[in-house]
Image (cartoon, rainbow, N blue to C red; front, side, top):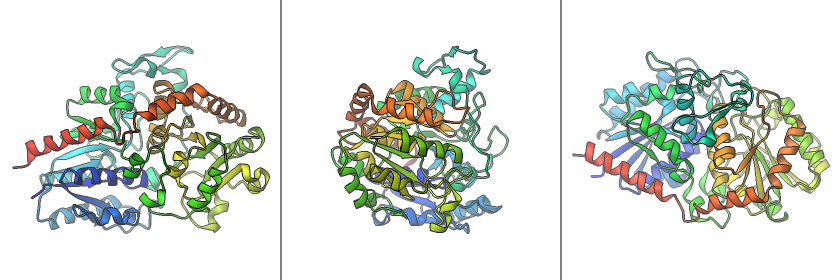
Length: 485
């Protein structure tokens, strides 16, 4: 009988999506896979995954009302009990569990059932490697104009004064998709959210008891960073991504329809309306603006962005995605029409820009937009999923990181891969209308950068990266040799 593997994702779409794709890859290697998922996220799992003969969905009961509400006290204890019950009810002991690094509270439960764990980073390798290298280079104090090279990492990732200038994100009780990260397990450096520059990364504590590490990336994008982490922790480290839908890899020259691969959520537009609007625009002319569902600029910065899109880019067609609650502290949540006044809402902008702009409120078909030939640039927070979705389709980025690993993803895009610009050199200050205008004009007008982006995306034209196929095969061999009798 095929061995069983459990996968435990963190709460939130950005973590769930790659875990669902990982289920498919492992099932194709003849593993039985159990996706252990909070009941609040179960509706996000498509029927194609539920109906797969080798994949089982096990819900961990959760009394919380949804991913955009902070959990009540004791929520992690409730999840731990649910995990314990799920493992108790399973007549077969899994050969291992692949656990999101933000779910470290589960370690004691898996240990009790003698299930070895593999740590899984749903973000890229660069952010983890940079956190580690910056900690080892401590203290981090740079003079104006000084550059600090980080031993073991590419020279183009050297730290500069501008890298150290970060505005603190508005403090809220929320983390990814509304949930705080779990409390640190036992003594150690675990803290809320990612480390400040120069602090020991909390993930080092989380991977200490694991047998190996998986990262949602590939050699073509991040080989130096994968190797750096592997050399430091002395365990197998596999780049097994980017874990994007199979349709994304199968259709490099055609549109990807989000509705076919991701559960539909509420939106002010249909995919047909988005496609029709994009079809009416010249090739490579459209600027796509989206900050995902978790973070965004301040209310004041949204006003600057609206002014930049309306007044200063007169011929620039754009798609702007606005989540209800945009500009407010904490993650936006879709509360229906009555919630629209709670965040930034550019009343009248639709009429003033006419057909030059498409403003989407709520869920946007991002894979469709990025795969359409009319899309020529992406103003993004540089969350990892958004970053790799753009890179794989040859779309340059204008990076506006807000928090955490987004700063490292932005530096990877701008300095190492050279397929984007920063929206401003000083992220400790408010981003202004002029910053945005100049950034858009630089990115959309840079033909050489577009060629670089297209050359990088060409590495993915043959489908899912070969290095990641090899890494998943190596993981299978490692598990079978060590744990399957």
